[in-house]
Length: 293
Image (cartoon, rainbow, N blue to C red; front, side, top):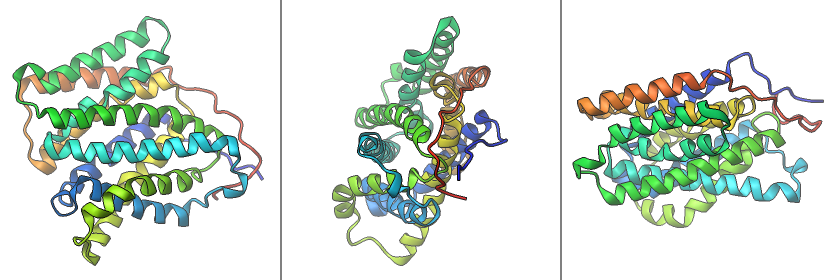
């Protein structure tokens, strides 16, 4: 029996919901970083998410083919890299700035995969906003934090490309039951030593709750959205994420932006809002099996 992956929710709405949930979970994760470290926090959160998805998503092991392995493993590695480097950057940079730099990943995907003048104007507008958000000319940005954010941008770009490929191959959300455990395994050699001795039942409970916010719900929304959107539309719409992160950084972490950063926020919102037009794609046909009901 074939399981339909279509949803009545517009793909741009799924993307915006994913961004908001992702950044809320990231802001709330700041409380775990002093105890577990950024790598330890990422590993524990991914491990809790893997357990949740193994129960909910029914991983399609019987339908997994050898040629699927590079994309599935690659997506797991990209997810792990993105999680670790983002938390490491967030430890040193304001949330909005960390996300703005990491947005260079989806921005590059949008620019390279787009066609026509519009596909270049929107990423260029978003890039101008990012420069205003980061204010590199001020000379006060932590360079190590910037380095982690740039690595996160590479992971984010790979994540977008591979999520669409894996999402086209498997129906439902079963693929996440494969990729998130891979991400947890990849981060374990670095996360376990950092978190060792600091894990309590209370920490595990908090990490499990955060795992629902990051990555379970956002990754489900993004996988569903990427089945219906082009790389360019998705990548440019992600320009809203620095604005969302900046807002949640103000509300949750009390990180106040400058007037220049407010102007940058407006630019990325304009670029992101414009990206939702004409961004649908025809989903690839799925094999005849059911992964989740």
